[in-house]
Length: 117
Length: 114
Image (cartoon, rainbow over the protein chains, first blue to last red):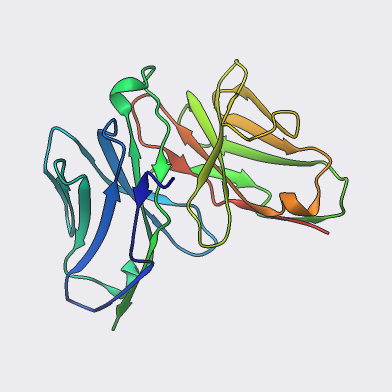
């Protein structure tokens, strides 16, 4: 049972336009969400996160939106650049329940973003 | 940013061999390290969680005698795949986490058992 779902395996966007990557989750215990970016032959790199007490978090060109009632989050990249082409993973954790300052992540299957010059 | 080094990046070996994979946090102390396995076009599946100085906690369905994890220090964890067989061929990836920090990942190890 996939608790974190990224229903679009791939997405193509023109350079300069907005990229919107979507993620849905089913576990109502999740209250901290992260996006990771992965290039081929490399490990995932942390991009941005959001706590359930917020509905938006912004870092430069990257903004994550969280809709708790819909159990949905999205990552917006604007403007998109060719270097953004990678696989993006959404991850979630019930951080409030983990204790000890560390937490396990549940990942989606990823969305491959291609930014076309 | 935080750096996690995973070694080796690729291993090809014969069936029955034991393979050790190392995961090091280079510029921070990792209170917790995680080991994942990824099949093609699938998500990262958590195998086990290890805290320095204590036994690893394995996820359901992961054989602890098959996948030995040692977390001897705050900067090093190892995963040993014992008596590896072709079905163990996969992409293994570790992550390291400092207190209240995001997980930082190594670049993974592609294991191929012939």
